[in-house]
Image (cartoon, each protein chain N blue to C red):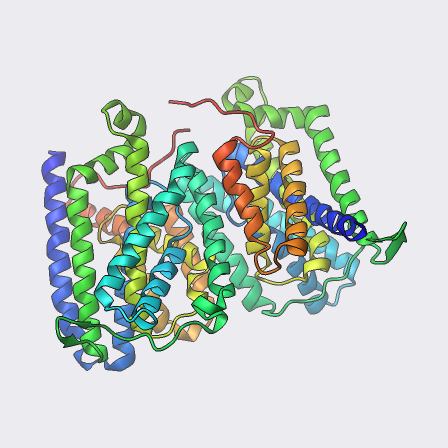
Length: 333
Length: 292
């Protein structure tokens, strides 16, 4: 029973992704340069949030370095495509592999001890990355950043214009989201879920907890690297500030706002975190406070986030008992 | 050598302040499993509140300090517990930890938008002269900070181990169920640790702001050092957090002087990773048993 309802939900995810991609392919046609940019930024952020959703929502780990990993991906791609003279696709792959490897290196000592130590290790790592980005001028340009990052040319197609690049981001995002969708349906993904629901039982069923938690964290970090590789050519200029510690906090709040553990949650969370501020420009700097306050209110009322709230309403309308949703993992008291 | 001693004392002074923040952090963690990621902002905000009272109400500095600290303890001791921790703890530790990150953003942006984005001078209650002792120039301010912080920590230690209320607090932290059976008002004891945490943070704020200036973004670094101090010292000990704070403060001061000013933050981070690799329960911590 649980099995079939889970499958049908995942098919819903699949359909939504494909339909959403079609809509987003055509929607920006009349939106102008800036509107298209905001939409692309939304999707790129959603990729980073997707990775964090795997780390937090599926494996139950707090990572406070998602923005730092995104920074590593962005700087790696920027350096490889400008100074390295490399094409975008290999730079993208290297960014992902690099952040995956760093994730493994960072997660190994922390997860050896206790899951919440990962939060402190990633917190420290986040600060370290920011220091390197700011201080190593010869490589990263320091506070002045790197500019003139080229937009990619793929398979003979030049993706220079804002519309062409937006469509490229749509395709990349959908491919990355589908890869994650497949992963969560695979036996690996089941193991991740088992791990979050009941680690002791998962261990007794022969799941290597440490290896799987580490893997979830590394894959989550690699998605931040992918997001960075998309971000650099999107903005064409990068400096250290969007990759600071507070940005990592912000990404974590987006996971929770959208609905931690829901596969479409990252899109909702990033919508609240990236697109909504554009509509609420009149609030000025207060938007951040507003967003954080909304997240606190959501956490009190419905820790499953916007999608959890939506599911509650949906179930109330259909007068069915609450479906088995995916709440944040509660640690053993 | 004279230089080295001066750096050492400066490090001990900032370290004693980190220790205050780290002790509050571990107290709250012990009694309610709250990992407060806003701890740095807890140290940043009281100074801003005090300056705001001087600026907006025209209150004299001493009165503003008393009012500011009282307001802070009310809002971020009592209010924090009632508004954020109580409704959230039933959902588990993870949502609460994330809520404290949201709180950190609210406090930081609130201080920036509501008060000032610029660093502000913060007057010191302590003497600011420098004296020369056998060729070593020593800042009286640093010595006074060490004394004040140590007195506060000593008082806390005395309260926790020697008074009845303090022992009840310890019992409530170690085993709330048994404590409840023994008739200890556990809920009140937990609230008490939140008030103590806010008080320690306010004291740290008043001590550190004359050195670092009062600025909305101070919380990030102070919080980071407090977390490192708590982990290095061992999560479950007051004296551990004290030692951790002093070690981190001294290492930071010496690293800034002898290694590199731009990478001074990196050295305590390396220390953190080494401790987690070699002695994860901290230098003074007890090993916690695994609970299934």
